[in-house]
Length: 170
Image 1 (tube, rainbow, N blue to C red):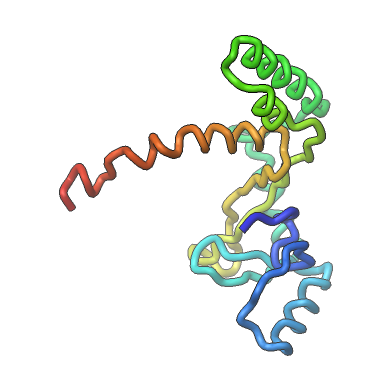
Image 2: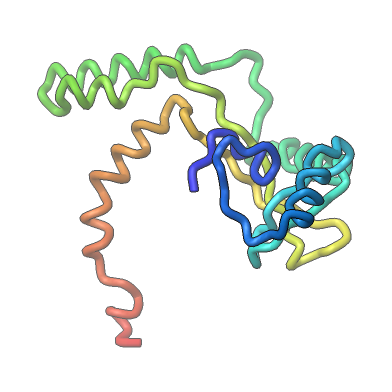
């Protein structure tokens, strides 16, 4: 399910979803989603909903973002620089006949949005102070068309690879 704003999953989602909730249950969920002191997210595993105090959710997000092994603070937004580099790369690929004009137009996102970072609480590991699985939702991001293109090209190759079950006979 592709949502325009993953951050708002279950709360104010622009995508109409069918829930197996009664009207009173849906009304209760809507009321929870409007409460600015809590965060409602899907659980990392198990398919349930997790309701956390916003302070607990935010502290876990900040804890993860402060890990210098994975993230660093940027002094400026590199999007325009990356956009120029991608445009140059794609124009060169077009000039060399590697991609068509139509593919060039599709692959170059002229008005990207910034990816959204959020976490899915791992309540299966700790109910009181769950760590979160970090997610970066790149819907309409600068590289989303390129990712889709690579996926499209590789899909036939990947699906033809033997699986572990094929190799082991399991």
